[in-house]
Image 1: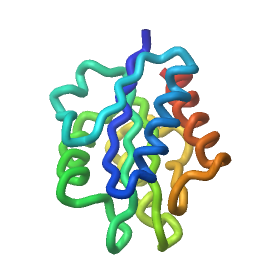
Image 2: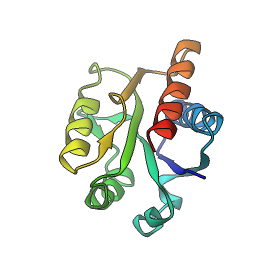
Image 3: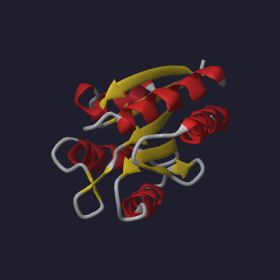
Length: 143
């Protein structure tokens, strides 16, 4: 069975709600999914999964959260060459610039990025939840 880790960081719950929907979409597509906060997942755990879907909101000057998620991702990206990856997160302003930077960084690491990163302003609406489920499904189908 395909194994996917949905690894996320959330402060307000918006990105967590997205993570739950992403995981549901991947499960519906037949994958075994581990939904986990970034502080409970280490780079060493990556060997146990076929694909990853990372979630992090935009922070401050349109960057990834810098005390927990960014240090993890800086290490994780060294292990993404040839790996199927999806990205998602929420933002409050700035139009999603952080997501474009994150996408580019992920592709430069050699990952097989599924879809463009999913950026949702504030909390996910019903349509946003549907798009999160679609992302999970597409990642599961890609592996």
